[in-house]
Every structure is written in structure tokens, then in C-alpha cells.
Length: 227
Image 1 (cartoon, one colour):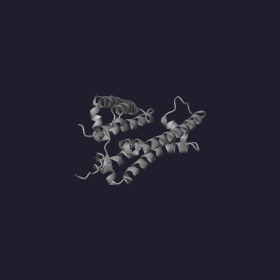
Image 2 (spheres, rainbow, N blue to C red):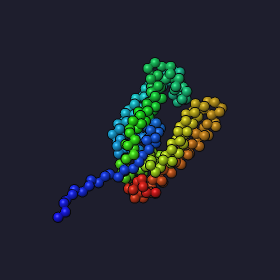
Image 3 (cartoon, rainbow, N blue to C red):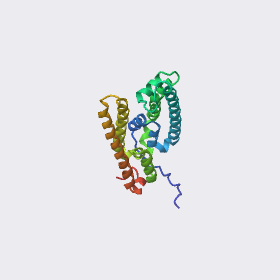
Image 4 (tube, rainbow, N blue to C red):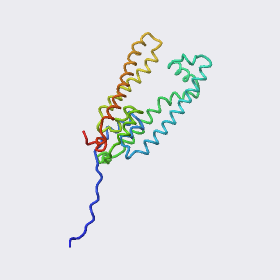
């Protein structure tokens, strides 16, 4: 009679992730970058998003108070430009911290996520557990967060994600510059470019929704192996 042996434990299926990509995503996206490694960083992502939301809410309230108090004296609230708002905040006492926080907070949160990814050993990325994805989640992300849906499936949609991120970043910068240049004659060109990138962002929004919707449920079940 052959001796009975306990079956060997089934090892979880793993995939290889890129540490460099993870650090770059942290620098670019902040806490939402943990969606890329959500299976292991679920708590960090949600805590980070909640803290960032509360911090931004505090900064926005401080800015509103500063703008409102400044408009009573020298500015018309309906006609105030970005430069006027900056001048109002800069010339007040405690509201200077709001302006500083507006610029420092995104840098700080992104630095924290990047350092967290950088501190993880190479083995953490080399044998990352493979998990299927949900098409429903991907569609909801596409509808409400546009190209963040490609972060959810980053291992297959890396190029699409960075293309959308680049267009979004350039569009945001042009939007601010066009507002600052609105009083100058050169502002017309910037406004035109701002409109162009706005249309490009809308095109990306439609593209993301179509892209995630036409993939079958099998694609997400076998992710990232199905082409």
C-alpha cells in the first residue's frame, strides 16, 4: 500500500511588475497610483485619498475666505482673474499658507507615494500576485475618472495611460496660462490652444469608455495575459 502524501500547496499565480513604473506613477498621480498595486495597497490608497481630499478641502476654504475678504476692498468677485486671486492671498497674513499649500500638497503626496514604492524590495515586484480585473469597475472608472481606468489595467494599457496623462497635463497648464494671459493681446493664441486640448481631452474620455466597454469579460478575467 502506497503511503499517503498530503497534496502540495497550490502556489498563487504571480506576475512581474516594474518598480520604475510604480515610482513614476507615484510621482505623477499621488495616492491614486496605488490603484496599480491595489491588491496589496488597498488601505494605503483609500486612506491617502481621504487625507488628500480633506487637505484640499481645507485649502479651498482658506482660499475662498481670502478671496471674499479681499474682494470687499479692491476687487469685483465676478471679474477677478487668477492673478488677482494670487495677489489677494499673497498680501494677506495667514492666507499665505493656503497659497503655499496649494502648490506644496500635490508635491508632498506624490513624494510620499513614490518613496513608498521605492522602499519596496525588488522581490515584491518580481512575484506580484495576479488578480483578475472587473469590467464593471473598469467602466465605472472610465465614466467618472476617465483615463484612470487605464491605470487599473496599467500592465496592458501603459502607453494609453501616459498619452492621456500627457494631454491632460498640457491642457491643465494651458488652461492656467490662458487665464493669466487673458488681459494681454497674446491671450488669443493660448485660448485657442486651450480649446484644442479641451477637445482632445473630451476625445480621450470617449476613447476610454469605448476601449474598456468593447473588451469582453474574459479579457478582464485573464488579465494581464489576454491580448
